[in-house]
Image (cartoon, rainbow, N blue to C red; front, top):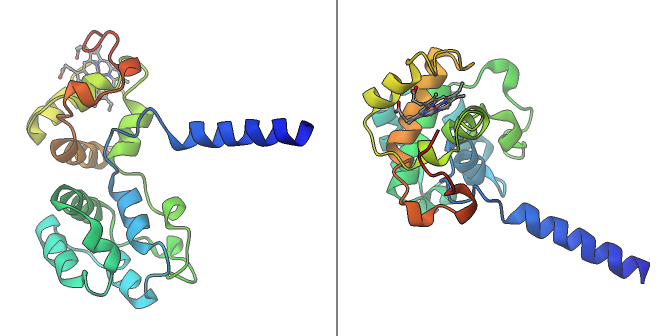
Length: 191
Ligand code: HEC
């Protein structure tokens, strides 16, 4: 009986973990890249991504060219490819000190720097609901404008992290309100 209760409790906890209220916010580059590498990607292919410096456009072309060798890339849609290319342009090459001994089997989610979604979840909820952020449809200059307002200038994100967050939001925000869970709609855009 005890064991049964414990099992029920545990599976309840796991279910709660799996269905996160923020699941509706699209994955950022950290998670997308870790997903591409999961399941044992060839070490030289992994190195080819994490040890190079390219612009966003160059990354996009490169990712398309590597999709045969890295099948995880074939599962990404256009928005996700753009999100990943953007992330890579900000975060690669990986600092030598972070390069794992076995790039084909490393825990990449933990090694990789935070992405735009991570920044939004960690830095954009203490004064207002995250809905204020992820439902807005705006160009990068407008995002940076908000982040430079007196109300936002103190947030502990570097200039480069702000750029990375703004780039992520250009591609992934503008989420229709009916895709936002009820719990996060209350008060909607009031702050
Ligand atoms: C220190 C408190 C604080 C934090 C943290 C905060 N905001 Fe805000 N935010 C405000 C306030 C206050 C307003 C109301 C309008 C104003 O004064 O800017 C606002 C309004 C907004 C608006 C709508 C109005 C506008 O100016 O565009 C957006 C978009 C926004 N915030 C984005 C963000 C993002 C992105 C983050 C995370 C990086 C964030 N906020 C974190 C205080 C905060």
